[in-house]
Figure 1: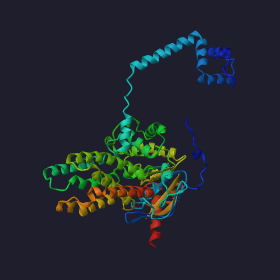
Figure 2 (figure 1 turned 90 degrees about the vertical axis):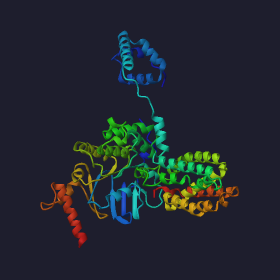
Figure 3 (figure 1 turned 135 degrees about the vertical axis):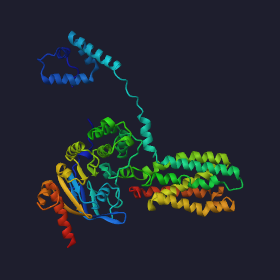
Length: 264
Length: 266
């Protein structure tokens, strides 16, 4: 490109000179799209009647804009974020988890001789939510979701993160009220969640959550209530073991991502 | 205008878009698809068959929702059995299940947008693609309505909109015409012909008339096996005067089914 078209060509273009050949008109138009200076020159050399016509059109558009309906306010952002992170079917289950934890806090206040119920419940608190987030029966659109590329471990982790985001503050509140260590509630809770996912690679997340919750209840929680002693696994000394279980099972789950491509 | 990636213009190296060899798929304990051989290219394929023929199970296997129990299944040139990485194939899939669940609080637009996001469409393309899909199924005036307020036929059309939102290369529609009124069915046939130009569409239906009117190819199944594959015109010629049915195509359908059952009974 040699640069700007000559002023005479621009003024002929503005006049609508039929003597200009098509190729020249083309190059002028392409150039005008990108060059503000030449557009200004074109505006300066436009004949009077064109300018009045343009004024009338722009006035008409302005009037139409002011007289017409107001633009619809945008409220899309929140709805998009909500759709991606939350499965609404989780809400009743998370409410139930909160209610159970609140009951544990209440019982603790009434019967201080019992071992900390919050600590006993903490490991299994997120499991109902995780199971519901990934079961066929409770997700109405599971068949639609299952045929999309996002389905798989990333989507499961996203939903699990959502569950934890709700359950962890609840645990924080509950431990704060009963005066037990937050770490002793959180680490087993995380370890159970990651183990559920790791086990879920083989037997399905729902079954894994059910099995782990039942196992914990029968082997640890119920005996602890009867003996009125806090079990060894929930003493501060076992924190390292919980951390190890959480990390190891999470690492294992990521190596088995292909097992989550089809929901069981 | 948009940029076309190299992957889109690359020549395909697979002879068939959908290719099944000796495919076996379980529905629960029952082997619903048992040794099916099927090869489908671009075009609209109508899947016919009596109840319990395994049509829905086949659709689910093709949609990569259930894992085949045996045989070979290739979609878009990539194997989808066992532990294959399904993400690439799934990006090119559109699927309308028979019983299609949805989140009742979503509006039609939110629902189709959510599905577009699940199908990993580029963010900038989503709003335009969603609007186009909703317009193609004729739901533009209800785009802001919540899913729970829609009638059965409208829900079905919303389901079709989510299936075509990503311009799939393989489109699987399981009984899409259920609940559509006669006029909408005509529109739907038009849409099918339109889609079949550059896409492999498999439509399962009980309405033989729909297949004859809108499909380029007829696939017939019975008891988990392929009974017949040919053109609609060929299906019509299969029937004689003595066969059950009110139209030539229906007579062809019942003649084929009767012949297959007689052969299987021997």
